[in-house]
Image 1: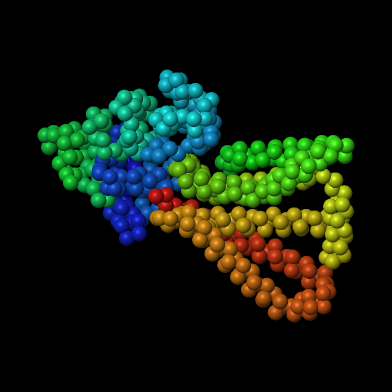
Image 2: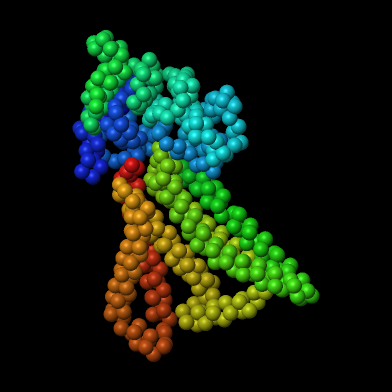
Amino acid sequence: MLVECKNVNKNYGKVKALKNINLEIPEGKIIGLLGPNGSGKTTLIKLINGLLTGEGEIFIKGKSVGPESKKIVAYLPERTYLDMNMTVNEVINYFQDFYDNFDANEAYKLLEKLGINTKDKLTTMSKGTKEKVQLILVMSRKADLYILDEPIGGVDPATRDYILETILTNFQVGASIIISTHLISDVEKILDEIIFIKNGEIYLTGSADELRREKGKSIDEIFREEFKC
Amino acid sequence: MLGKVLKYDIKSMGKSLFPLYLAILITAIVIRCFGFLAESFGVFKIINDLITGLFIVLLIGTFFYTFFVAIKRYYKNLYADESYLTHTLPVKVDTLLSSKVITSLIYIIVSSITVTLGLLIAMDMTAVIDLVKVFLQQATIMFETQKLTIIIFGLLFMLLSYMTYVFMAYAGISLGQSHSNNKIVFSIVYCIALYYIGQIIMLIFLGIMMFSSPELITNLNNNTTDADAAKNIMLFALGADALLCIAYYAICHNRLKNLNLQ
């Protein structure tokens, strides 16, 4: 198993954000981590990335969360996490310095396709361009696991298509991708597996095709039905 | 990995500090040039006085600004948005923390050198140098030791005192960031609380020292100091600062190990 979560709990004060999560994520799959806002998707992702500490155990390729697991996990958060005073070239050097599996040539190729000047400082770029640069950096790593938190949230439909295409054409063969989103209709077609999360608990898991067949509905329709307000 | 983390910490702080260093050196050169002109033309004296005022503000501000930049780097890199990248690098917490400490130390040394250089360029420092010589002479008599030992000890003491405040601010930020809301306010509150706790601990230790060596009080009352007592007091101050640094480092380390980036 690529990721194993055993009895994972996380509280924010008195609020239980995650309740006894037991989860196994296999290799070579695109997994949709789906749930409404505040359901615990980002909390689970942060725990896997070591940005939060909680109860229970998380293993990535048998390694507990730490420097070794971070070598094989490529993470795209929902916020801009780059130093805005750096140029794109400097950020590429930064990734190259710290990640052995980062392919700088691939990053330059993707940036050139978008017409992004690598001598430009990030602070001079629009929010959308910064997000694209960030996505390119993450997808230029030959990682075992890509974790993308809301990669298509708050962007226009054309950019959504670009993002999904970049994800699909650039991830390492045999790797898994976890995509967290509530914009299900946009990602549904690329998902192999589904994890529905609700009020901090795993609500439903399974193969996307099987779920569609079993319920006779699209994943988006299942989501709308299950999470009706 | 420490070398790589250091490289980026040094670069990042340098971007904020090097323009200031440049400003100090340029102002110093201008003051020196105007000083020569002022001897012949009165109008240059007024301009020179104004620039000297700015220069003094720059010199004093450099130390505060160096401290501020060090704290800002710690906060931005380890707790603000950038921390999402920092904490997903395959780097140990100790390495991240050590890099911040070493970078702060490097820049307070560079700032001190720049300020000294600026002063030497701008002004005739003969009088100040003479004063330092007299002070060193008296210190060698008081501590019954060599000038070099006094200089090394003095520099070490100043650096450690500065680092105590840097560590204190780091620890305050780390504790403040563990709260869900009002993180900045809590960080400031923790910094103030740590400052007073540090002072109280120092006073307690000083009290213990005074009671265990009553001759210290007698010497102080008589305005006389014996070399061993003076050395003990200085070593105590150095040791106390070192202990506080270790305690603050432990707080930072603990908070980063139990990270909660909400």
